[in-house]
Each structure stands twice: as C-alpha cells, then as structure tokens.
Image (cartoon, rainbow, N blue to C red; front, side, top):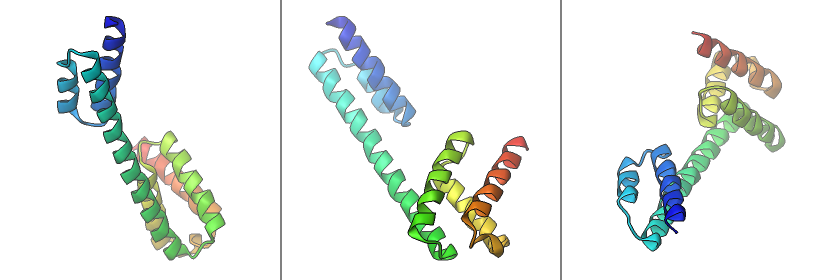
Length: 133
C-alpha cells in the first residue's frame, strides 16, 4: 500500500509542478493517508484540466480572429488549426502564438491571407529563423 501511495504522490507532484502549482505539490508531499493523497491527486488533475480548457478556448478565439482576417473557409481553418498544433510540437511556441504569428505575417504580406498553405509555410520558416536566432 505504501508503494501505491508513493506512486500517487509522485504523479500528483509531477502534475502539479508541470502546471506551475508548486504550493499544491508541496502540500501533496505532506499528505499521509491514501484517501487524502487520492483526493489531492484528483484535485491537481482537475486544475490541469481547467487550464487545458482555458487554453483550448483561447486557441479557438485566436483561430476565429485569423479567420475573420483571412476570410478562409471552415475547412481551411481546420487545416490551419492542425498545422498550428503540429508546429507547436516542433517549435517552442504555443499553437495560439503560432496563429498570432500567422496574423502578423498576413498583415505584413496580405497576399498570403488567401492561401492557407503559403501562410503556413511562411509561418513555419519564420519559426525556424526565430529558433535559430
């Protein structure tokens, strides 16, 4: 039983520390009962899920803003969404930041706004240059 409690504490501490909740992580380390550790772990996971929901809503807002700027179809925006998520895995930027970069690039080169593939390629190249700098 102590091994499972230790595993729960480790998982909860990892989740809490990754989400920036150091206070939760230190509190979880002090929990002695299995029920208390499980409750705290569920609470930490709940906090992470709320943050993920907020990030997803923010990403949708950024996509809506880009769509209003470009006038691209919903289908094209789905491709841009997938592309931004993939780029966020490749580069040190969030998907929302990548969509914002697309808006900035489009404002400087309006001819790219009507071509989603070109917009994504230029954004990817800009991210490569940014990481190289």
